[in-house]
Amino acid sequence: MGQGLRLVAAGVAAGTVMTWMLSGALAIVLAGVSPADPVAYAGATLSLVLVSLLALYLPARRECRHERGRRQRPLLCCIEYRIKRCQSA
Image 1: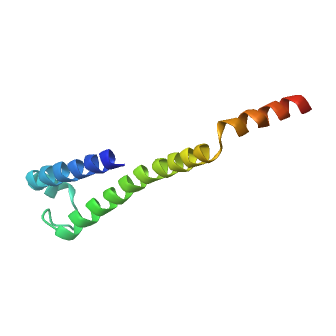
Image 2: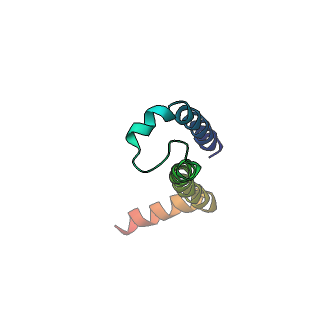
Image 3: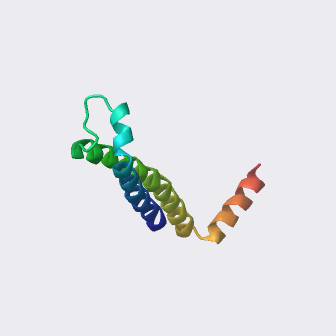
């Protein structure tokens, strides 16, 4: 998850710099919002960061749950279960 957070931080930094540099061109597209509106920048940045964190967290949580379950079941139990299941069939 650390690699993903570094990518999100780099993307936020690059996006903020590019938006600041292109704010003049953005004035044409924005309706009713100033190109230098800090609330709009903060809102857009926050929403993108939250979606990115969610996209990082969900697969990491699923993988941790899967790994934890695999560690708790010894290999021998899995083999014995399969043998019993095959013999009963």
